[in-house]
Length: 179
Image (cartoon, rainbow, N blue to C red; front, side, top):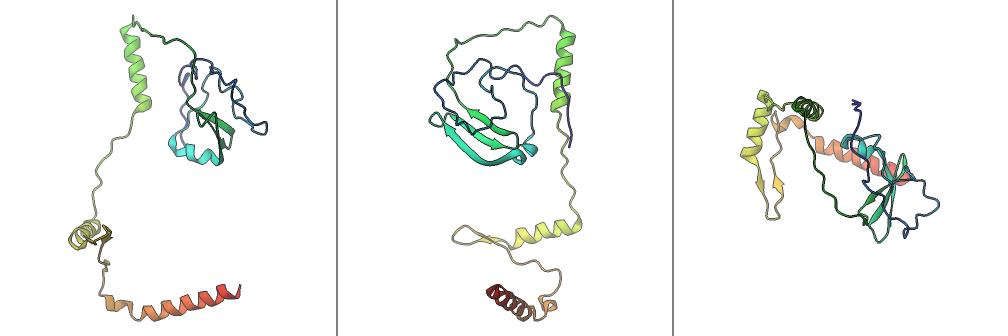
């Protein structure tokens, strides 16, 4: 697991205070952030690799589905689309120091840099498998793919494995019935 410590993840979120006066959050709900509706600092940004690890069963829809409370290992987190009562604002930025801009862009790309992806070199066996697949597959009338079973040796080397397998299956059935 890799951690990246940065001085600031984003601006205040939400940007303006949300009006939740008409929403009744059940008393038994333990929110991970009691003031989720007020602008505040973001302390942690989780990657998609970790996001699904923190989710637990339990989702509550409030305000006709506009606000969703999802249960996580941190408590309930709020998400959704809430109406706001603030005027549209335009923002304008002015860069006076070109070097500062270059450094910001450079830091951004250092953080966002993805490793170069190389096309893997296939081994001889992998190439044979691909060739076998492309030369033997077809589709049935329902659209399902059908591929012949690839065997590296003659099928006779399997012996009478069907009889052995059926004995094992019947033995398993008898044990399950006895339980």
